[in-house]
Length: 299
Image 1 (cartoon, rainbow, N blue to C red):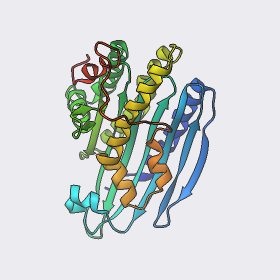
Image 2 (spheres, helix red, strand yellow; image 1 turned 120 degrees about the vertical axis):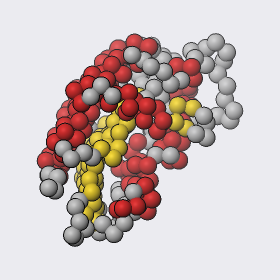
Image 3 (tube, helix red, strand yellow; image 1 turned 45 degrees about the vertical axis):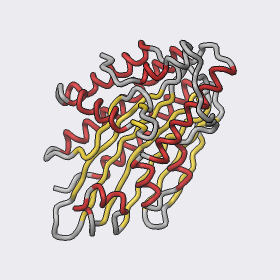
Image 4 (cartoon, rainbow, N blue to C red; image 1 turned 90 degrees about the horizontal axis):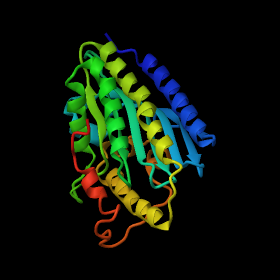
């Protein structure tokens, strides 16, 4: 039976609406919307909040693209997709707060289906969420991972440990030998005979993001900060840019499928800096970050 992609699309559109509503309520600033069409098939709507009281920039993007041939990045990962038409849809978001004590965060949920005449469709779900602090607070990390674990539990006790490890492994900057953040959940190629079960898990991850992230924002958004914290935040944002441009599969897929560049690169922070051979002051809060980001069991 062919999966019901229209139901998935309806959920994703509603999810984008809900996340934007919640973020605007926290910040007091509205998103602007930019709808777009893809010449080769499909389109989307990009929403961006800029220069807010809490979020320096937040982007929440919905896209639904389709075409007659798979891009090279996809067939390299899944060679059985060669010669198939495809349909891909998802919601992806990145939040860059103004206050350095509030972590950056990313989430996405997506659905993919590839078809050709005379063959069963190939489909799967993917997604997850991760958090990238600049100053570490154990309370925040525990809440983040506890929320991730709790939304996974109805789907099996092995789900959270497996997808936490996948997230730790994926958001790793090999050229720096560093973790990007404290992880969370990452899953891909989720396909079992039970489409409803897979769809329910994707929905749980999408709906669970704000439950995991917004309490952290509320705890940290009023903390006082100065030039030192801001300079460190901008420096560490450089790691975020490096990962997205060098290692992220979603960025590559979007560009190779002729997606809208502005929407794909909305994950980039509005301000960032690099400093040659930067070394934080010994025993400083900045120096403590690397130990905080070390992979560990938070719960």
